[in-house]
Structures are given as structure tokens and as C-alpha cells.
Amino acid sequence: MNTVNFKTWPQSAPRLVAVAAGRAAADLVIKGGTWVNVHTRECLENHDLAIADGRFAYCGPDADHCIGPDTEVIDAQGRYMIPGLCDGHMHIESGMLTPAEFTRAVIPHGTTSMFTDPHEIANVLGLAGVRLMHDEAMMQPINVFTQMPSCAPSAPGLETTGFEISADDVAEAMAWPGIIGLGEMMNFPGVVNGDPQMLAEIAATQNAGKTVGGHYASPDLGPAFHAYAAGGPADDHEGTCEADAIARTRQGMRHMMRLGSAWYDVESQITAVTEKGLDPRGFILCTDDSHSGTIVNEGHMNRVVRHAIECGCDPLIALQMATINTATHFGLERELGSIAPGRRADVILTSDLKTLLIEHVIARGQTVARMGICEVECPHLDWPRHARSTVHMGPAKSADAFKISAPDGANSVRANVIGVVENQAPTKALKADLPVTNGLVETTGDICQIALVERHCATGGVVNGFVSGFGYSGKMAIASTVAHDSHHMIVVGTDREMMAAAANRLSNVGGGISVWKDGAELALVELPIAGLMSDEPAKDVARKADQMVRAMHDCGCTLNNAYMQHSLLALVVIPEIRISDLGLVDVTKFQLTPLFES
Image 1: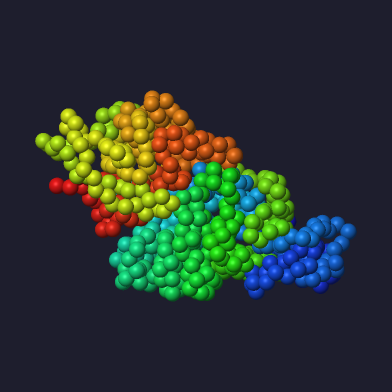
Image 2: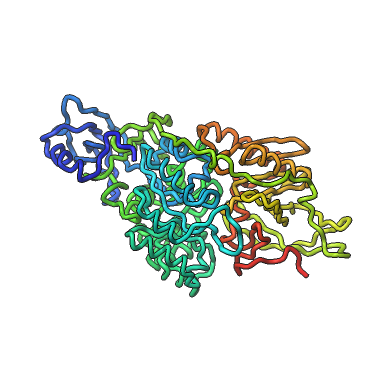
């Protein structure tokens, strides 16, 4: 943890009391602002905040008695003073950035606390990778808490990961200083069926007094859902409709509504509060997955809060969902999430609660950003060589690796096809009649080929299938080593030569995303750390990501942030159908399913 001007509450309590009483001077006083009190849902005009040792000492109408000759004074007249924003569930790796560069990117947007689940790197580097993410997170000037990943693989028996996480790993990690709980319990069938390892992980977390993250990615709200709730997860972010939000909060879960780069689940669920009148204390806003382009160009948690307000939510309630509700959920209500004595002095100055222009950001009593510019260092780890050499695809691929042979004598086939759904994580299980030429199945219309290329153990394995919904045309391909959650390599294309070129390119550069059209590479995002992240500045990665989006558009794709859909095509715990290194997976039944109907 960054300790500049920051102490624990027991260490700082004597001084906080003295400053509040006027016996000692504060380090910083913010004067004359409108105090947005998320405890009482009030806007209190002409109030002052006094800060010492990185914590609030006094929050009241006049802090003149806290000012000494060395006290810094900030005039907040005409501006609101709101708590720093908290992201209750997110994956740093989805930003394509290391924790340091992700932090640098979100600070100007007012995010001062993040609850991160590094299960992406866990699938590639195991517990050692989680420790690297945890250690760099602890170095940052804002609050970056780590949830120990629960499911690597996410669905045992349906995919092969680079490493596996065990119940012993979870128990070990619970003693690390920055571990706040257990990451999303994605293996919901395991919990429902009483899998001993899943229940042991949950027990280890609860025995440590920490929070269990949920992930119930099923529309079934019958006995299976109730069994999952009984299994211990304390929250869930996989809902997509109002009924999901209501069901989870009625079962005592906190319901997380996400707005990521491609997940637009707030509008369809916030009506549980705005129209049905449910208690908003049960709801939390989060991002889940936001890539660097979204963060740099549109924002982070400020973007989510603005969106909730645009969807009809009272601004003060939306702020509660992004501050105190989150802190309370993780047992940190006395530590952060509000402007109140003793809490970490995380505060934003803004002139408008609805547009939420982030003018000045203070974290732990220190100015960290002004008018969109980060003003603090975000320290980096020295990432080891083994973390930068993780793409082991085996021999270079040729177009032959992506041929799909038809059953003997067939002139056409009826295939199971993955159907992409814009702005949502679930897919549709589609069926299509495809032509056969010289014994090989060909694509037609909107249907492309998809391939899962093994990249952890150099087995040379390639599993082929079909996907619909991207709108690609011409001769093109896009390959990515970001392939939630097993993080093999996903290649989607209309031309086998292009698919081979894209796969080989990523093998050569050590991971990332590569887009090809008509024999030439249109875009490349290098992600050398675990094939998932870059330690370049966010603006540089965002520029490359923006070029990737333009290249996908040039290939015919018009979906919003379609790369996020691409990267989740192998996520075998979200219905209805996915692809893994073992074959096509029917996620409604949690079993492998044939590519062709007999």
C-alpha cells in the first residue's frame, strides 16, 4: 500500500481527534463546497472538510479551527464534494493494462477504489500470476483490493487452462494483505451440485471473514438459483433484466449492475429501484470489463454513474451505488466509500452531479488528478521474463489447420453456430445449413469460422467451429490471446489463409490482438504480459485499440465494441454456446456438443 501521508485509523486516531477539536492543524482543508453525504442522501451547502494523515478529521460547517500556517486550503465554492468512486467488480486485465497503468488511466475519472478479480492471469500463470497482480496493486496511490480467483478452470472438464487454482491456493491467499475476498464463483453448476472444492473455497473465504463474489450466469431462477444462493456467494453481476435484479436482492445478495465496454446491463435492471421501489442499498454499480479505449475516451466509474442517472436514477442514489454501498458490501464502511470522519480522504470536486465532470480528485488526502490529468506516480513491478513469454502455440499454423471436413458424402451440413448478442455477454445457440465443397464445409452469409488455438502447452491443437453476428465480409481474420477465461487463442475469420496469418503473428509477438484483411495486417495490439496486458501507457494502448476497432469495422463489423464479444467466445460458463480447446460447449447443459447435427 502506498503510505505517503497515509496511516491506518489506529495510527492516525490521536491526530484526527486533535484536528477535529482544533488542538492540531490539518494537512488539507477544503472550504465552502456542497458536501454530498451518502449516509443520509443529502447535499449540505457551504461545508468544509479537514484532512490529516490521509483521512477525514472534520466534516462540518466551518473548519477554520483546523487551519494552521502549513495547512493547504482548497476553495470548493460552487462545487460538490463527493466521495471517490468505487468499482465493485472488475478485471484489470480487460483493460489490456497492468495494474499500474490501469490505475493511472482511471484516477482522472474519479475512481479511487477498485475491487479486482485477476482470474484472467490466474488461468495463464496460476497463483504466481495472481501474486504479481496483487503486489503491483498494493503499490498504487489509490485503493486497489484483490479478490482471489475462485475458478481456474472456470468449468472443470470443459476446458484446459495453463494453471489450475485449488482450494489450498485460496486458503493461502486469504492471508495476503490486499486480498479482500473470493473472486466471482463462475462454476455455478459446481456450487449448485455441492462440488467439494467449490464449497471448500467458499468456506475458506468465509472463515477468513471475507466476501464471496458471485457469478450466476443462468436465466433459471428456480431451485438451481436458490441452491446457488444457499452456497454462499454474496453478490452477483450476471443479471440482464429486472427480474434478475429483484431475485438476487430478495435472496440477500447485493446485485451489481454493470456498464463495461460492451455490457449494457444497467438500463434493463435499474427499474427495480426507479420503478419497483426496491431498497437501493442492495444495488452496486460496476464496470466488469472495460478496455483501454473506453477508459481513455469515455471514462470509468464516472461513465457508469452518468449512465445510471440518464436511465432515470436519482443522482444521489446512483452515487450511493458507486460509493457507500460498495464499501459496505466488502466490510469497509468505516474505511472508505463516504465523506465522514475517520475514513480515507478520497474526494472528488465537481460542478455538476449529473454530467459529473471530474475536476479535482483527492485520494488518501493527496491531490492525484486535476481536469483529466493524473498528477501522481503509479509504480510498476519489474515483471519477470516468464510472465512475458506465455504464447506457446507450437509449429506455425497453415490454412490447413482451419479446414473443417464434412461427414463423408455430405453435400451440406446442419451446424451448431455461436450467435453473438450485441452489448451482452450471453450468446445464442443457433443452427445453420452450410454448403460443402470438395469435402470441406464453407461459410455463407453472416457466418464466419471460429477457431480455438491451444497456446499454453504447444500441443498444436486447433478446434474449429462457426460464429454468427459480427457481420464480417471479404477475406479477413482477427486473432486474440485474450480469450476468457482459459486464454488460449481465438481466431475468427472468413478466410483460412488470413486466420493462419493472424495466429502466427500473435505467436511471433508474444500475444495480443491482430486484425487482417486481404493479405495485410490492419491493426496490432501487443500484449506481452501473459498475452493479456501491456505495460505501455493507457493512451498508447488505447490508440492501438482504437485502430483495432476501426480495422474490425473495415472488415464489415458494425457491432458496438465487438472485440469484447470476440474475447468471450470461449467463456464456457455463460450460456448458451461457446468453444473451448476440447470442443463446442453447450452451456445450458454444461456438456460438449457436436459441431454437426447427425
